[in-house]
Length: 262
Image (tube, helix red, strand yellow):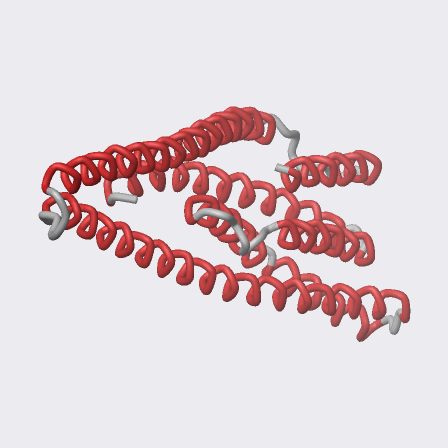
């Protein structure tokens, strides 16, 4: 696509990507506060369960991302989604470190086998999540490079075809009767023109369908993000009462599931 068209596509996607990142950051901050409150109450296993649940949901989100997007535009959207998830993973590094530090302090006073196994499980899943993330980032970059290469080759072929068509249109026929050659050339031009028009029409129709689908998807996402931002802003502060905190934990898990499904 021309540079101005690529910019027109990237700008709104970049804005949505920023809003997604901000939403994930706000959710991460909320989760961190819940985890810290659980730790203050001496509930290490519950805090670890919170992180493990988030890791599994994030892993499922990564599994849904595909490097086999049919167009460069769709691949760019997949890369934006991957960037948002990557930022979210990095934002949770502090939570993992805090929980491990709390576990080490606890283990010095009480060698709790269940708590130790829970922390080992959390750290295994954290390592696996980061491995999957890094592999997907590399695959996505390779796919982007390959898609750009194919796009450049296609443009070169189009230029070559246009040059050939131009030469055919200007080359005089040799041999045979001039009238016959002229008729044959006119017939060829008409036929070729019809073929090119049909091919161009198909490409324009496909481009229109993709543009409409992208615009609809972006509008829907923008509206949903507005509602999500308002909902997040209206949440109550993390409670110090255990029963209220447990309700907030459950609500936050449902809310995180809904965000992940988008």
